[in-house]
Amino acid sequence: MAFAGGTDTTISTIQTFFLAMVLHPEIQMNAQEQIDKVVGRDRLPEFSDLVRLPYAEAILKETLRWQPVFPMGVAHQTTTDDEYKGCHIPKGAMVMVNAWSILNDETADSDPLAYNPERFLKNGQIDPTVRDCAAAFGFGRRICPGRYMALNGAFITIASILSASDI
Ligand code: HEM
Image 1: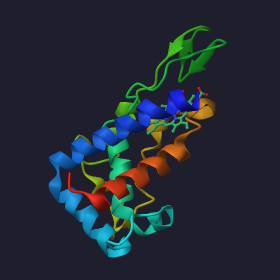
Image 2: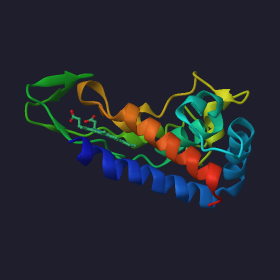
Image 3: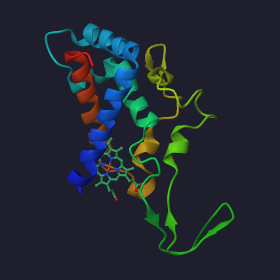
């Protein structure tokens, strides 16, 4: 399950990152400038650098938000009758979550269709008041159990690629 759940999802995120960097070279340069300042050019970034690389972290969050891997979540089925805001949901109904609309909510973010990592930053740091990209990993008891590994793996990949190459 870890292999099935963790491969295409992480690759899709990295492919979206490549697309975003091709489309926005100025964003790539901003991230590289911070990496060069914090990490230098003699080594690759490490996990301990994460807190000092908010721009790369913002790129990861924005990549997951902008083109979520599962825009309509993963299908679930009710095991009993249920009710939500007055709507009857019969046992056996298939329930899909519109993760895309949560991540592209005009009332939460300005210009949600634009790729803009800086929406996650305030004074150069990750802004905890901005809605996170967590909806990309599902909800409730079946939320992605690999999300911490996914975030760490994608962060170190993005930071290493930006440190070693121009896309
Ligand atoms: C960017 C990478 C990833 C994304 C966007 C992602 C997203 C998701 C989503 C949306 C679900 C469905 C949650 C729900 O039903 O509400 C899920 C389930 C799952 N993910 Fe991930 N995932 C990622 C990486 C990983 C990794 C690295 C692993 C394992 C190492 C993993 C393992 C799983 C497993 C086992 C499930 C099924 C959980 C269950 O049904 O109870 N995922 N993931």
